[in-house]
Amino acid sequence: MSLEADRWVLLGTGGTIAGQAAQAADNVGYVAGQVGVAELVAAVPTLGGLPLELEQIAQIDSKDMGLAVWQALARRIAVHLERPQVRAVIVTHGTDTIEETAFLIHRLLRPAKPVVFTCAMRPSTALVPDGPQNLSDAMAVARHAGAGGVVVVCAGQVHAARDVAKVHTYRLDAFDSGDAGPLACVEEGRVREFRPWVRQESDPLRGANALAPFLLASELPRVELVTSHADAGGDLIRSLLVMPGERALQGIVVAGTGNGTVHQALTDALHEAQARGVRVRLSSRCARGRVVPHPGLPFEDAGGLSAIKARLALALDLLEG
Ligand code: ASP
Image (tube, rainbow, N blue to C red; front, side):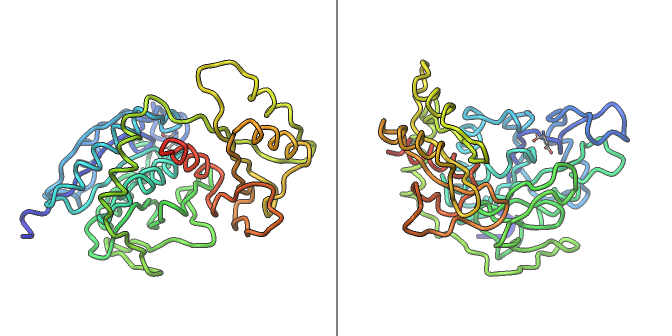
């Protein structure tokens, strides 16, 4: 492949990185998803002159992310990754649900090429916005010879889609990869790897099998997320089981206490749900660590995923049958 043929694709979805506030000193009272992707790129001198194709997939606050935007995004990422001249895809996204979208794309496509998500904690109108630096760093990762798979780049760190979580409401370095730690950092436009970057073998068969039902779906199987806590009860679960509506409950992820323990009252209700055919998976509400599998676990283990990602994984498993 000649160097001239190489291209990068940048897909915009909105978020704070594209946000605007009435005053430059206001880092919280802004409206997300206002600035178009061309304007975001124009604010980053390091992107000037690069063969970059731009597409605006959506313009939303990522708190409102849902199936329609996910489908549009997954479809376009898949199309671009198939093109031999495209080296990588970059996605700008809000921080609130970036870990869900990145995990979804990882789970659906398992791309060998890099798919680099980036974001910002301050709107584009801030006195010192962080978006331009994050976008510049994302491009450095997208051009890095050793990069591959779905990652999230923020505040100079590169996180794997499976591990990353938003852990702070306000700080610029709002993301963390838990026990795994970040994959790499970006220093002055150079990527420094901290640990072996697990690269996927591109698996077109798996991609097609997972993507087709997702793109055709009119809705995702209904999976609810509940948390175990002191004084928990089973009423919420029992209400869900009898609730009329078009989307019957198909799955529950329970964020257990500690190493996957669940209040007895909630456990009883979850067993009733299982008896009615609802799939129940167990994660932990702890910010760090994973549920260490052992024979006494009350429900199917979520495989070390956070409760948020376990909810999505179960919905996709149910969709794929
Ligand atoms: N609510 C915003 C969003 O997720 C927050 C952000 O981007 O930082 O779109």
